[in-house]
Image 1: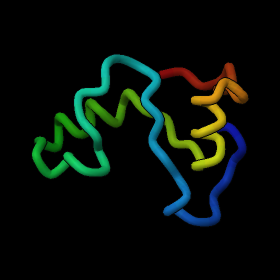
Image 2: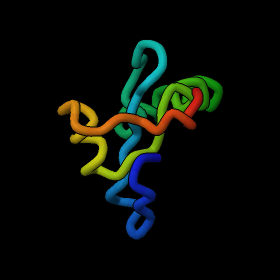
Image 3: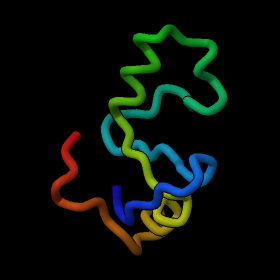
Image 4: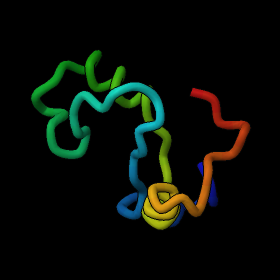
Length: 68
């Protein structure tokens, strides 16, 4: 969503930007229904791992065109 990275799916992270994080999709999704998983995913954007860390560090922001 920030830099356009698309080479390796393993380098992509989900970043919560809307609402309270109810559970970690990467480790706890198997404990939830598909509807709960979809609801949690709807609170997230996909970022490369570098942009994700830089966002938490205050170095990058989501483009204004991103609406959740």
